[in-house]
Length: 202
Image 1 (cartoon, one colour):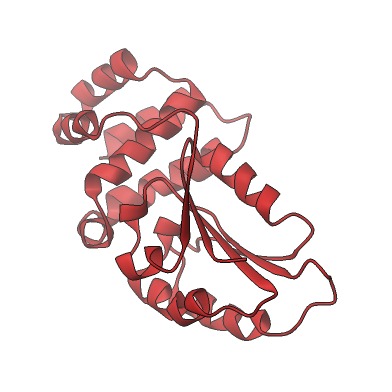
Image 2: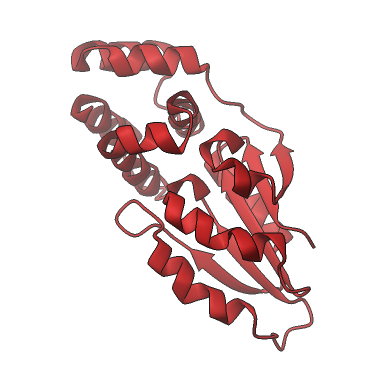
């Protein structure tokens, strides 16, 4: 099976779809360390991927929120993404393909997921440039504090920032947002508290 890039919908739906694809495979997962997926994590993982698994289903690599990979980490994956062992499948999830290096995207089968789409990136641009108090007012009026709408807003911010070069320029802002996304995976998290703290910190 080719490497697959899932985009669209919301982070939870993307991860659920990726897990379905990799069901029954011996799974390896790359997660962010302090807001980034680093080249050292990729280099450590790669040798294990070429060992034939005992499971007939093969091996799978799940990279959720793949835009958190550094450019170096993405580059380190290129050869394996292009020519993976026959028993290995990569699944990457991302809000929008343009948040990854084009060389990574070109080596994947791109699949859009139907569901709640991203909010307009023009709104993301407006809210980022507003004062903290105005951000809170705009967010409450235009987005609200529903979990799905909040995650969709985060995706639109990332799409607005438009890729690896922009992400480097907005490192602190992006890292804070990724940390907020992580917190929102916990069902008991107070969405309003997390979002308000994030918007004020920008």
